[in-house]
Image (cartoon, rainbow, N blue to C red; front, side, top):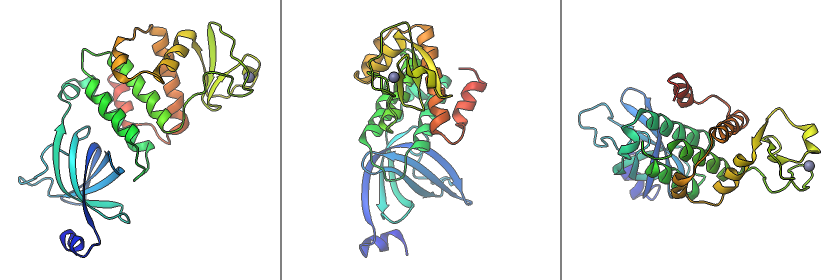
Length: 263
Ligand SMILES: [Zn+2]
């Protein structure tokens, strides 16, 4: 039965939503499966026909990191949906013209694809991706914008670190030069509890702790004004390495590429 016929019979409804393309993969001879994070439905998979023909009516609207308006036949019981129309809203040209930013952009969509479940709706995830892409440019504080994205993203996924008190005994954290963050336990440990750290812990400076606290309260447009030391940035990277080790089941291809070209 064709999609139009199923719609007539009430088996499908025509739906529309804004979406950010996460991944496209070839399927069969002339099909493509496109994973998108949509504003109204969470992550969805669309099947697209005729992608290699000259008459490909979708143009560039289905390329990764595109913000497009999608019209599709919705059927809650189906894993792969039929796409009817896709129009570009924002191609984020500043992100695409720079190899560093494009590589990190691909990392962000791969991370999103990996850690979100289908139809798990989250406006927070959608707007975090959209606003990060809109703020990234070669002149921006792009390294910090990416760290902001990562920390916010893990927070939305429910993996926020507890910073105010010791995550183990709930006791106060005495102010000092270095703090111990334990990803397995989910927060900062007081001196007494540091005797039982897990293998997923890292020492961070007071500056890094402040950045973590700040990131949970500021909007993304403020990140460009932050001045951060190299040490704090490296500690944030170390923290993200631990996050990925704990919550991802595999190495991300995009990150492998980023490390290979050393950006
Ligand atoms: Zn403690």
